[in-house]
Image (cartoon, rainbow over all chains, first blue to last red; front, top):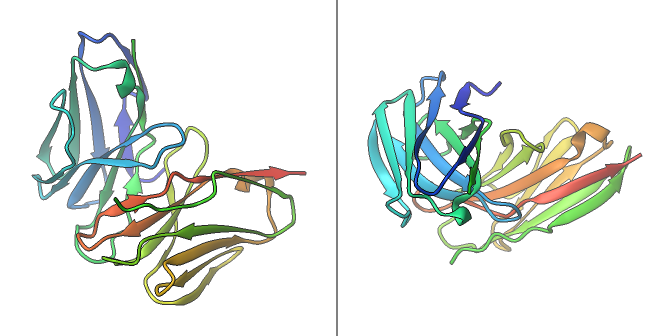
Length: 114
Length: 109
């Protein structure tokens, strides 16, 4: 257990569906991250939040919409996804953004888009 | 772009030693991380290097040469449970992690 939980662990959705991924950290951290992990590819950083403010958006398509209502919770809202969006979506948290900060990862949501 | 290069897959024998290499662009460097990821699980932190040299932590050691843009993870006395993917990540000038694609390590009896 890393102190970061994600739900659901598995999700199958059609291209017209709307769904949300949830992440919660119990570590008292101030920064939270969404990553996409595709087979045999590097982790792709999607979004970064620090103290509930978005600080990074790496040219992610608008069909992915993050939300950070407080420093413990992070959501990724999904709408009109494409089959190539099928991947493992990982949430992580760290104490802060600057200087050395180990990131703690959740177990991920395995997303399949039909 | 910033490429983090590491071998795709390696095979080693139980009880042996294996070295997993990682190379990166030296500009905008703020540290080098190694993570372990078992299949279907979260990546977990193994080591962090920001200065040149070897950091030893039990059976695992990590080495860094900043001038060469080179790091390696050394695993000794391999156990079957060490079968996993090992991810190398460089912390850039914005303190974000740039990741390699990971090295899948297969341990054989």
